[in-house]
Image (cartoon, rainbow, N blue to C red):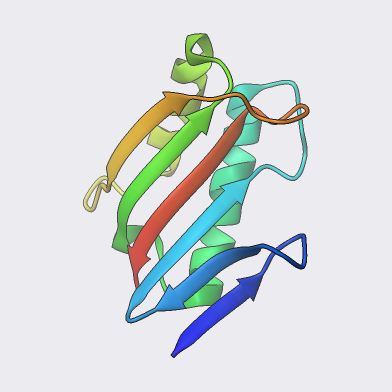
Length: 113
């Protein structure tokens, strides 16, 4: 059975749960001018979505982080390091990408349920 958690738009969902795996995307709703602030907000969104899907950050398998400016990666890393489960760190990659509007970060993850 596949479960889709609704997203902001009717043609996109924020998470899909299938066969014991949740795949999700998270962004900051508040487009604050700080990478750190947006990262913290996006990671809080990850926590909410994982909980709704029946998972948690200690079960994250992979994370692909898209940031708008690689020069601000340390700001993202600070938020990540404060948030991440040090006993169960996921595989994470961080790449620079052109994001729309004032968005500075978008996170795509997979986790076990």
